Length: 329
Image (cartoon, rainbow, N blue to C red; front, top):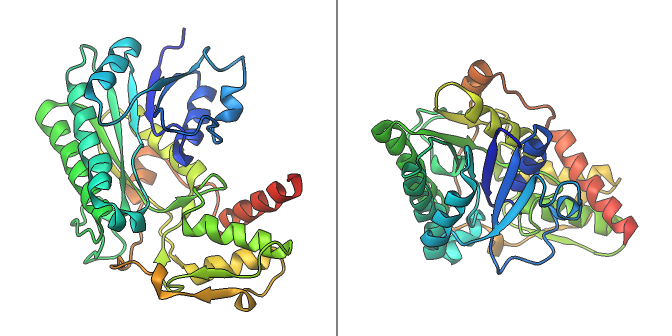
């Protein structure tokens, strides 16, 4: 029987799937909460679900919803997790302007429900909350640290700022082991298709194969601190292995524009992006964060974390995955 039992919300997402693989590799029993409305084919973890040596042996899925406190309490009571990784919720910033109420419930109130359940557990557990660089928004300083003031510019950022502060309150007021991972943009071949990085990688591959003719994007000058999701889930795990809980910025410290991402992606398939990329202001956000770049000095020094790959590797991995997927289909 594994000594450590992890519960992951958002297990079918990009981060959840990589974290699941990491924890299984470390001998954990991993439990994930999935919605009944989720696709029956949970593509990012389907390879694990179909492995009889893993599924129902060390990996278990439970139906539940972040708004259903009764079911969440039942799951906690049944599995008695030693570590909880709260990753779930609507995380598309642009979409949060279209559906602000549900975004705030999923990104804000859900964290409160889980913290309350965690507080009531007989055996103490360690709790990871997935915070985000979006809490800084129009930051007054760059790069940002764990002490930077929160000035979110989107409903998603506001909800995450609420959940991040709550996590600190529960840590300070109740002595709970709660960590905020303030993660900057992190991407991978498993990124959702409605995110700009995946959209670019997919378009580059499809245009190179003659399957598409153009790519329409918003602001090409928008800059982000982009890292690899595979590296960032290691940071999550390290936070809960430390002897005391704290908040950590997880970032590369480098910013790259959407234009640079496009250039690198199209270069990988030997195409001149200027011939294929069009701009449409309709894709611009109502409010754009300024100068979001993270200072990960604290997690590097305290936990020994560092990213294993850079920007060029990230883009190459994403485009390569799209090219390979097309060749298979």
